[in-house]
Length: 480
Image 1 (cartoon, rainbow, N blue to C red):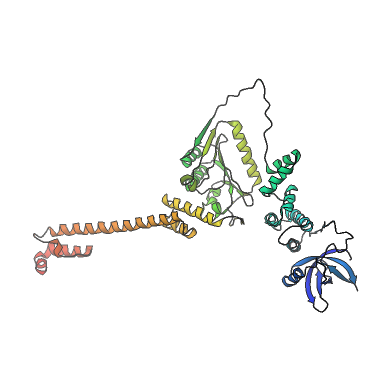
Image 2: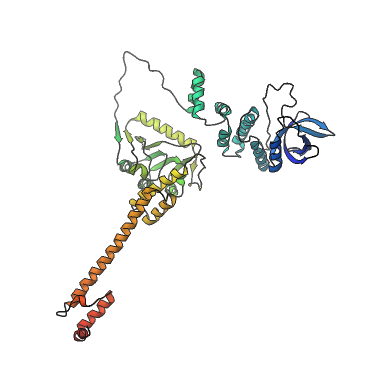
């Protein structure tokens, strides 16, 4: 019908009349798309759709003998083209997942490489809303975020349709916003500013009982001591956990009945094939909640028995323990402080899913530096090897596979091979000394026998020589 906007597939091209044959997706009705001088009729784009099978949006401008004639200019029938706003309505089936997936993919392809006009913006909004309900495309947030120009990306974030935006967008909104708009920005970012302090002539002074202890070294040892002394429960929120000593300590605590909950990231550091076996802890009773891209957990705190807080820059890794400069502050018997940490931890366990086993895969991060991951894990493996955790040779082999040009890996392998060579050489020297000693003892049975006149290669020859000396020494001496 004239004026209807439709999603169509380009079937063929009639060269003589310079006309495309197109088919409307929903109704399967075929029509025509004349190739005119209209700048909206992008010739290259239409031929590309013909070649690839992609769909394109068209508008019916008239009918000839019951056949619709289309234009690629969606404003072709507008009296005035000053208002370029365009809308499209998408309908999904309540029970046909295959149909919904096909329609969703078709609509998504209409967005192209960049969302830079109102039509695509309106379509993106509908896809986001639909995806929340249908869960057809898990990576939709990320894909739309990278397609949006600044204007449309900012608008999607303001309307709570995208959970993230750029720092530049936030900076511009803050600079140009009034007090109400700035408060909305803070709420979206989860930031709560303190109320202005009201100065009073008299002030109540609270005497607090508790302690705050800063740590800058031997942090793992301190954490292990606190975990071993736990009597009821432990709550851990840490970005990365690869320290085998802390792993064993947590497992031991679980085995003695301590309730432990861990919130951490499901990424290549924690779940990249060279990591700790968290399934062992789950089987021992650990409650594990995982945070996945595009979100990232960056906390590093632990709560012991809802009384002791350990928080700081320290990740639970060998790298943090041996290489980095780290700090941890231990806060004890300060209930007001502890309650803040407990509330934050409880919000994490409510927000992120509880798993009964570690996933087989991790979400892909388009800006994640995989070379940095390989270097990080390879050096973790070197530290494990130095602590003699597991098969040292196999551990160093894995480190070399991940990062063959890493200086620390090369140095560790060289030291390991040197140790093996020295050990083997030491064994050879010791064996030779033992043989010579045995030979000297044998030769003492014959007076004036010179040991350097006979070369004996192995223990068997010494045994035979000894027997000859003891039973028939004259004959032996006669032969020498």
